[in-house]
Length: 223
Figure 1 (cartoon, rainbow, N blue to C red):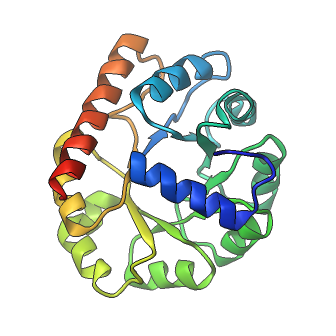
Figure 2 (cartoon, rainbow, N blue to C red):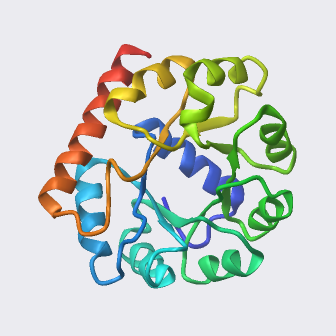
């Protein structure tokens, strides 16, 4: 899935497959390199195969490299809070595939694609969404989801091309997933409700199970 020699079209296909299986992105903000593999093991066992290490975490490139080396064949891993071309280069060099941004930067979107990486820009308005799409983005991070809400997403889906995937991020809990999925969300970015620095592996495992169970339940209902 995360083969280092995939081009961008193959990366998109891999992402599509992964989102269909379980459209949950684990955001491990604040994770340390010496512990990241233990949390990733729990994610893999639970069925979450999209992993983001934000660039404002301790030694994020070390963590991304460890994840790419050990889990790259079964998971898509990458960086969050990406703000520059230099960071994109650094993530690419250590084997990361996902470039998640809190904002819409057309230059960075195009640059990530040129490096055969998958950009996931943050969008908060339809104008930002179409700027991202016109720059080549295939997956959009709806951020902050608390601002747009499910009703806003439903209106967006009426005009955004159907092949574009939208992942709400920000304040997502198992309880808030249903309205967004009914509105057309193809996945979610999971933050502090899933992981926070220092969380025990047992509590983390419980959180993973809660999110995955809810995803499976809602997917089966066709929400």
